[in-house]
Image 1 (cartoon, rainbow, N blue to C red):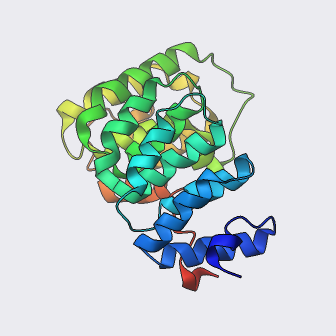
Image 2: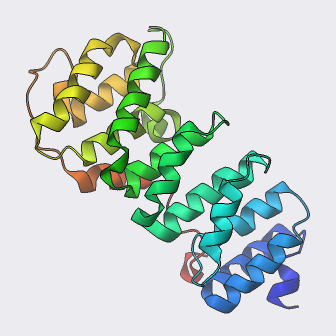
Length: 240
């Protein structure tokens, strides 16, 4: 059997092995993935191929990923997977697309965009992310009975993704930190318990119980924290 035929296989193990082989093949593997994408049998199959496009080298993948993201009629799983793949593939160069997805008509896309921005995005979206955070907190009712799991907070809270992005681009500047800190302190009761606990540990000035002061924030820590597991490598040959 060939990689081309295995990329169309309904057997999950065979399909996954073909994705790994295609990624390892570089530009020729990218072409095989793109050909298989056109013949994908269902949404899950297409999403797997799109995911692999986030890790393969080649000249055409990024443009195809951008086209998928720009098509609101495409299946949600495929579009969100394409956004993750483009973030992995292009890094900071995906910042413009990620910013555009903050106002996407599908309510699930902004959360993925926020995680991408927090992981690799440049500072062009600071105003928009702060505005998103303000709007979200103002529209979220206080609900002390509803909490998130601390162990999976990164996957549950778009708010901590937004805060991580703003933290990365605030460094030790009080001018940049102040609007974020004051917003979170003023809307502390709108945060879930796990979000509050996370902020108390990682950006204590946002907690009304702590001094409102400039904090030395580590941009690399926030980027690394938000990147796992969504942006981890999936198709390396030695990962099997």
